[in-house]
Length: 166
Image (cartoon, rainbow, N blue to C red):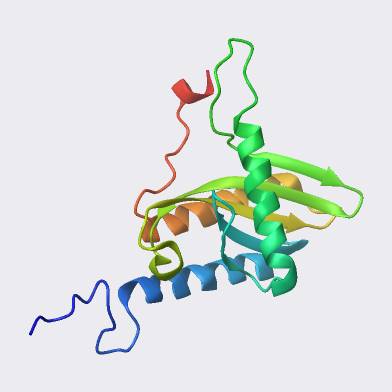
């Protein structure tokens, strides 16, 4: 008889390592939404449009929202530069009368192994903020959250360098 690998199956504590990581990330996401001024919700989605976790979004709304987030992020990354090159968006900002949506890459992970079959997936963080939210504060806090997520990601988001900016 083979012994189950703790990484993939339950441990003596009951939850697998990946399940604990997902729970810790979800706690960080909820704390971010609760403590960042004028943020209504935060959602982490896979680049292919699956909702991975959120800060308490209505479940009937979560799936279409995840699909829209994924589509907007992909669209932004496919806008060609004047030289014709395409590169992933650093930040996507959408302002509407009822609020703002801010999208940012959040790393790559297989932490939701059950729903993603253990495959490595790129993720996108979406923040839904009120119309009076301070964009600078919100994006700063988003970056801090993505940095915290790095400990749980198989491939954390790489920080932009001066070479990336030029």
